[in-house]
Image (cartoon, one colour):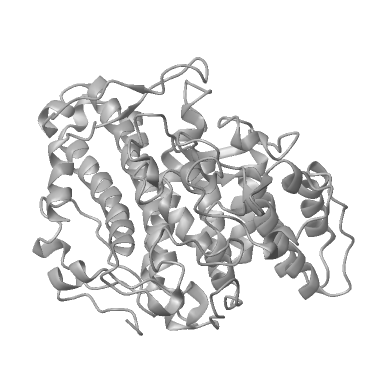
Length: 468
């Protein structure tokens, strides 16, 4: 791990650089700068721009948001059959802290955080080379990337926010300053509480909202693969939903809706075929050069004509009516199993935030805030169901039934996009028994991942999750 982090410092922030496109067929990335020192990478305004965009390369890490972390959130839920390719990751009671999949995902998250922190440090040293507006934008991008990385770390390695009333249970270490050595004294910190992590996420995302542009000059590419104001607003809305702060979740979901920059596509499959569609708010972009180890790509794991490690469960397909387009256009029956076709290629982009999620965040917030059954929430759900040719729901008799309907709609719409176990835990639900995996009650030690053994040995201040 130390060797890997030192490598980050050597590549000069520009290992792979996003470039503008005039069409989806154009090359997505420019030739990388090779082995630039920080002094070289920040020598001019143009190079600083490329270094800023180079931060997104760490999100592409296939062990993290390039694919694997999204997969882990879903294979530890009930909408997939239990795959064998990922070791003990899907098997709650047999996962151990020395498991390589755990270590790789954890390290992938912190690599991204180190990159963002290091970028800000070097930008501060070269602030005079860019305008004040550009400086603010770049710092805001770094804070968004850091917040996004911490969101998945705290969601998978800690019990959910509402596990304790004051969220004082262990979260993950907060590393907010750049350091040349990931195990230097400045980085050997204890785990922050979940409350402290969420406070930092709120701080970073609010700063990002203030400093990010609504869009970039290249509307075909950067507005989805690069952080925008709406991306930060949407992630903050998700964060508040996790906390149970429904008024704030509604406020930030409303802000995305009010921007009028996003809308539902005509059919649900479009977002996974046209990565820059009006429905896509933020995604991690990929092309053929980004994932040379194709065993880690989303499409490689989910597509039946590739590795096909992950088939989808009857629990999932039973959620749908026969005419629902999410069943007819985004699943495929092959070799007596059912597969999702959201991902069909090793170059598929990883969707992090889509407009349907914003509508469902608002629906859930409206339902929770209402004293009775919220018709507004019903109408929001029906926007998504109507688009998918599913029967519109009617207002149920009880508020709890409406909330349950919204959570089921989230499964139908957002499946295989990294929400699975996170949605169960944030709503105080255990994981039902499925396939060959036994049920895990809410509060089980095993619904969270163990801290990697290597990091535990290198940092004596870390305390392992209970049960490992």
